[in-house]
Image (cartoon, rainbow, N blue to C red):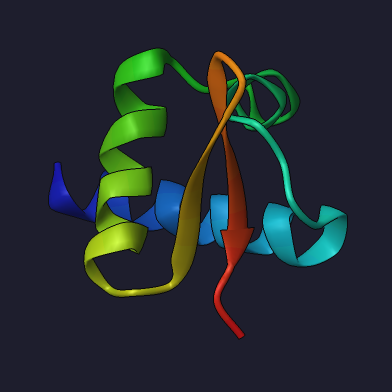
Length: 66
């Protein structure tokens, strides 16, 4: 399972690199992820200090840390 989460984290990283700041809904829709996999992978990226997660209205904005 850890391999799958790491792979999805890589997909999210590449998506953010290509598309810039996005909401979880945008990431989920464009990559075809389940809620569970999306948030597991975002947790992975957050723990590795690869993404900023900023509250925005009723959701969050996700961006890469450069």
